[in-house]
Image (cartoon, rainbow, N blue to C red; front, side):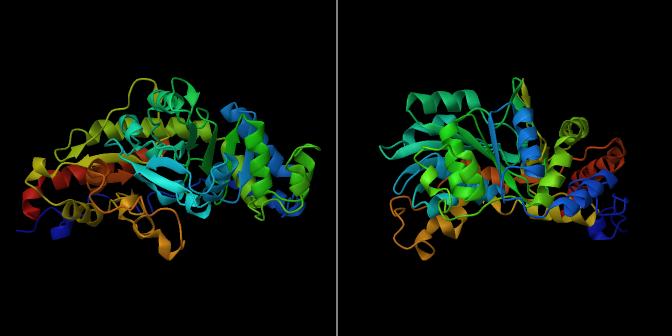
Length: 417
């Protein structure tokens, strides 16, 4: 008899035509804004036009004094570290599990990323920070993984007790909040990505948020030399004499990306509200499926739902390996179910095991990492399956099909053993 499982010859549970998820949503309004920008200018060297409009919008949305756009989220992180005066030999505590760009710009500053164990959700564990602090420690960088805010109250308390700067990587978490306060506003500065699939997208791009004028002027010096630096760094400021050259880098956003991001910013809250509705359905349904565990959000924590993650529990379905379960999901047509790849425990990456190949003489020798160094992060990563979260009412149908696919595999798991 043929199995009902698609992997074994049955009919797939997901019948909706793919692709099942694309981002950002582009409509005629978006196209018109991009076309209008093409007519105006495709190069904006100063803070004017669509770049100024986007930065003003970001300042209003996040409630901060300063927003500076950049060419990518990685560039925003690089600028944030440089602006925070991280210098050669300094140490910055970073979560062991994150996308590597959270920490890799530190190598270019000859500073040392110090990996810290995470909680099972992937966010840095505040209780593990103190043991990593040395006289060289200058800051803690916090990622809000998959759009779920980290425990900022405890993190800020630990950092303040040890006179460390708090920096945030909000690249997954545009619009996420804790008790009404938006992610990206808890520390000295924060960096965000505007890359393709992010909750707020320009296709490519990034930005830095801060209330600190020194940080602002230093970001301008690093990322926006010449016209913008000459206009915005006050005369008599120590950095003003470097305006023409800056620090030698140009990291400004493309105006077409700024036009897309500005269009998307006006829709962000409606997107997030729609995602929250779909996430409520998905988490409620997936939590009922043997083999899948869903972590509830703490009170007052509102995620961006960049990704919805479930923890795979093989012990509940006969020890079926996650690889086989995931293979079966894909066969059912639920192709958006994903196992995180490049967003992984960084001790598994060659850059963090042997940086000297790319950065000869880097002062990282006393912080060499190996697989197994971060058991919580590594176990969680190895047992994580994630989904993008849809945002429209009509997306509920495909969401239901994805739930049916996971339920079907769980119910018939013995056929896969």
